[in-house]
Length: 89
Image (tube, rainbow, N blue to C red; front, top):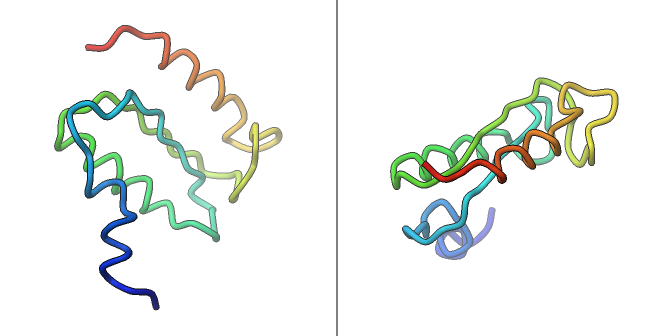
């Protein structure tokens, strides 16, 4: 219900450049606040630009699950740390 032009200005996936930093994308598929499709769209945009990213989709955790304790997202922070330590390909 917002201004279409504002949405385009604020959509990071539409403004990626080759110097965009290495990125760990993750979402919980049961998130009822922010659609998981937003994260998936970002990963596709990064793939098209051949940018360094990793996408993790967790079945449970809802929105704002922090460390994901007790959900399928538990341990995401360790996966992110490992990914960030990897050499760029």
